[in-house]
Image (cartoon, rainbow, N blue to C red; front, side, top):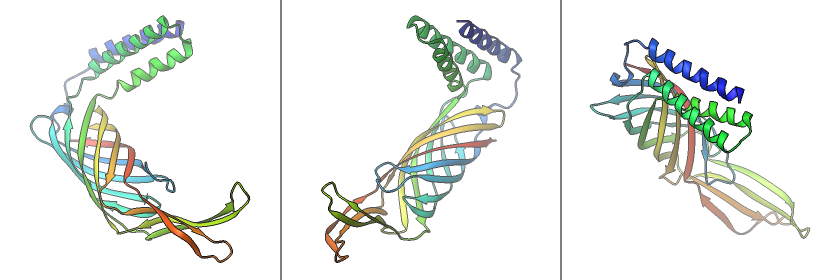
Length: 259
């Protein structure tokens, strides 16, 4: 309980101090433009053969009256569904919420953490675990602004067209088997429909950003295939099984310049 009490006192002092020291200056809510650099991870959700890889993005956001605006940029993927080197031009509509002051943010964070700790105390949870949850709630409250976005990304794949690999082994009854499997690139031009949100911590003219998003591949670019092979004749057996890949998830972190 000493740790919990110390945490509450520290949060309260931080909230009062931040509120008292806050001075008028640049207001992030009055920024109409933002340039953002991002680094993230992109992974297919319905692929058995492919894992995710990194991507880089540079984009520009323009906000108009109210909370609405648009975003456009350049995207580079080191790998997409096992095919290397993809580029894209993401374009999206953006809805942005207002920004709390640092004093309001600290007060809200302290209140949320205190509520979490009080709940854990009533439930008689372990003090160390409760302390960790309180810290987590407080840190999450530092995200002072949110954006919701939806749009499309036309793109082009530059890497090799098809990725093959061969598997060999024995089934449960001891029968030897072989198969050719891989991911086929049907065509290089691609188009995704994108939707997600962005959480921000504005710091003067900068903003630290965290952006999870979902993507649906409209164009049928990637097909997983598997073809059984007769180990004696080395010839295909039956028709190959095929499955297109459509759904993706990405998460990225970045920094923005507001002006």
